[in-house]
Amino acid sequence: MNPHHHKRDFSVNDRLLRICALAAVIGAVSTLAAAVLLGLIHLFTNLFFFGSLSIQDRSPALNTLGAWVIVIPVIGGLIVGLMARFGSEKIRGHGIPEAIEAILFGKSRMSPKVAVLKPLSSGIVIGSGGPFGAEGPIIMTGGALGSLIAQYIDVTAAERKTLLVAGAAAGMTAVFGTPVAAVLLAVELLLFEWRPRSFLPVALSCAVAGFARAAVFGTGALFPLDTAPPHMMSLLSCLLAGLLSGALASGLSASLYKLEDAFHKLPLHWMWWPAIGGLVVGIGGFIEPRALGVGYDVIGDLLHGHILIHAALAILAVKAIIWVVALASGTSGGVLAPLLMLGAGLGTVLGAILPGHDAALWPLVCMAATLGATLGAPLTAIVFAFGLTHDANALLPLLAATLVAHGFSTVVMRRSIMTEKIARRGYHIYREYGVDPLERYHVDDVMTRDVQTIDAALPLTDVLTRYFGATQRHRAYPVVRDGAFIGMLDRAALDDADHTLSAADLLRDTSLIHALPGEPCRLAATRLALHELERVPVIADETSMRLIGIVSRSDLVKPARAHYDEEHRRERFRGFRF
Image 1 (cartoon, one colour):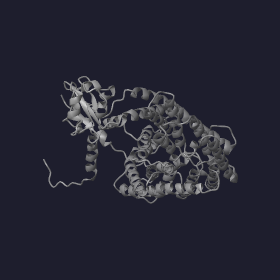
Image 2 (spheres, rainbow, N blue to C red):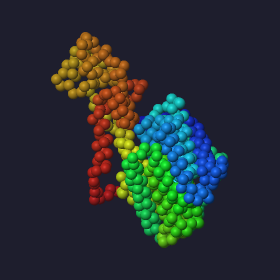
Image 3 (tube, rainbow, N blue to C red):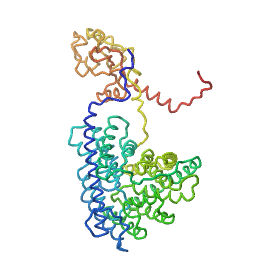
Image 4 (cartoon, helix red, strand yellow):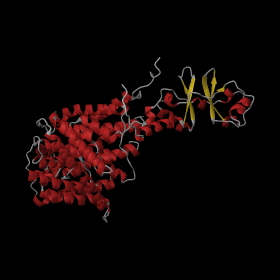
């Protein structure tokens, strides 16, 4: 028999089907939540800028308020500040850092208040001209819905995390119609693992949301685009576009947190900060009305070359300023749509000077590169740009420029715009993924096979003399009967015991804790920690209970030593073996 037949590529989870079913329900619910959020944005936009009760999609740039437009974002900021003060402080911010914090440090528990107040506050902020997108709020809202459903069901914290992320990713799918990018966002930013137990439910939730979105919002790309195929001259342009996009992303992130520090120095309660940010938004909106609101229409015009360079520069400057100030003020809104607009504006400017390709490509390329560098999620940004445009010809330039931008921001920035906010609350998040060395090795790879055992029939007098005397080597020994493990015996069990008894007479039920050869070392390490043990016996199978080895804490150091050698020991091979 193959000695490795018991080992698997992935762990088995018998609750996976149940979690998938719940994730499918959450995907549908999150799509409805997205529809409600977009309806709220349209409602408040019409109410604030046009004085009508309507959910018609109208741009705030079309208003005829004149200088009065400056007041509208202030009113919205004031309302949201009051909602955060007396409702829930967790509605502040752009949503994704708050979801990450709940996942990593709050056992994925979110409150009903967040599920209600987040879309309402975001609808008010964006509807009053806030330069934000709907994706951050819907990610927070969808995550809250997933968490709430999970809290009413008997699930583990890990399963609750999966359902929270399923709701968040489904919400993003419903807003943009990009299910694959939403799954990648979950992998790169939210799940902090790559396991079928979490990946499959999240992917199913996004698939359900994608089909449901088609029924609610229709099908087709949000910004359909068809650029010319790339050629070799495009590569240098991609490198330059990537570097400039990375610089833009780094500059935006640094400016955001410097301004946030400035707000903290104000002699005012944070409740008033969104109104101050709203004043800057209003002034910017008076100067450049197209910088107000979500701006999907502006993004489309930038991608299709309908905006001249000088106008793109004006939009880029005003949007950057009002977005950074508003977000630093602690109001409620998302980051994806503003980053798309800023990146597309940069690409429009560069399109006139970059050689080697269709000028229409560069707004899309810079849009994705800026997004990927800012979020620290390059794969999400690449697939997201493709999902928004369905432009297959742009995939190669997207890959080159986005990875350059991501590399630039990784070197320049210690943390992304997502994790910096969490770090300022005292939590550090390490985002590199790697397989745990204890997962790569199995128990039979590290266990000690030559085991000193105690015969079950041996009298305690002999046990004391042979095993717990002056030459004692271990704190506990496995007890066997005809080669089968029946328990562990330690020195404490012998105190005050009747020495006429045999070793088998002192065994407790808890002494049958064991490991199997095909289990990953991580599971054995968990068992040692949970039961406060130093050694655990390894049995061939739970039917025969045949003892084949023992694994100790020192054995579990072996994978870490091998991992260290792989990472730090440099080798040179002077010849090749054929």
